[in-house]
Amino acid sequence: MGLARRRRTLGYSQEKLAQLLGVDRTTVGRWESGRIAPQPPQRRALATALDVSLHELDALLMPPGATSKEKPGQQPSDPPNAGEPDDMIRREFLRILTVSGALAALPAEEAEALTAGVCRGTPADFARMNSHLWQVYQLARTKGSVYPVVREQLTTLNEALAGKRGNARPLLNAAADLFQLAGEVAFDANRYAEAAASYALAASISKDTGAYDLWACALVRHAYVDMSEHRYRQAAQMLGVAERLAGRGDKTLSTRHWVASVQAEAHAGLGDLQACERALGRAEEVRELTPDSANGGWLRFDGSRLAEERGARYARLGRLDLAEATLREALQHTALASGQSLRRRGAVLTDLAAIGVKRRDPEQAVSYGREAVELARASSSGYIARRLRDLCDEFGPLSRDHRVAELGAEIATLSTP
Image (cartoon, rainbow, N blue to C red; front, top):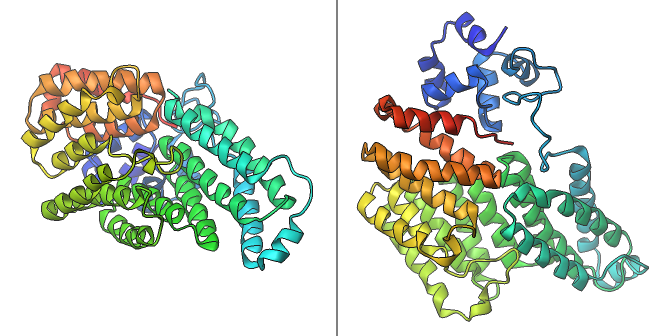
């Protein structure tokens, strides 16, 4: 029995099932055709609506002729994803959390004695390696390609935690840093549960070591997971905590300004223009800090993204003229030029395409949408692909235009992890 047959057996139309799940009818149609697979939160809700277990749901989503080892929506010839989660990285997460929690609870002199011994790297070595990995991640066309190195670094970090020279606190901070990077890789691949777990572990370790800026940044990244699932109120609550933590952190860093920038997104999602503008104003104050207020690793906010972020906030609030002017300006920035950050440019192009959809302008929607599709293919970014799939759900009557329909078909072919 396939998904469509199960739906009909229960007496649901596509429209009714979509209404129950809070998605568009076309999304249900794409699930049933095997063109896309439900995201993790949608899978749980879908299984409940169809009165099946998650294992049974996987069978319903299996394309005809696929073996039990294939993922829903994945063709047999698809190559394995470099960012595929596995038991190993989960074990590394738990091991680091267990060891770091014990070390953080011990008095400093006991922790030093316990961790004395030979290791493969000093805390400074790990900090430098982490910083290098953040740079590689930022420049990588395919974010998932960084995953194997992050996993190896996690293994090495575990060995160092089991026996290292000197104070444990810097090494624990390196672990919190690395967890945030692991979460970013998972987030780009649309693996929200794994990303949230990584950020929670980073926050837990940062709390134990009293690293307020690291702690606040972990909560900010966790809030992005909530906003990706349209839980703006929960995100706003978490960002309020992050704001208080950042207030206790290093005033020379840009943490509190990054918190404000993301708070603006949450306020925009809640439809609060005034709160959004106030938060953007606080984010703009980052320009008053010294140029090295962003560390290039777990904290990279230096104000260079404010134009594109402001444009995205205006678009969500329905201020289309303001949004379009701001986003067009953002595209002219060096960091968003062709060949630079594909993910950032793809996000801006998708926002501009969405403005075209809201204006019922097929030419604008298709022009920007197609370039975003090309960048999604070039970068293998699940983030851009997800944004484009959300765009498809907004087409509505515009999908009768053959150009828009063709764009929708192109978006449907994008592979997402």
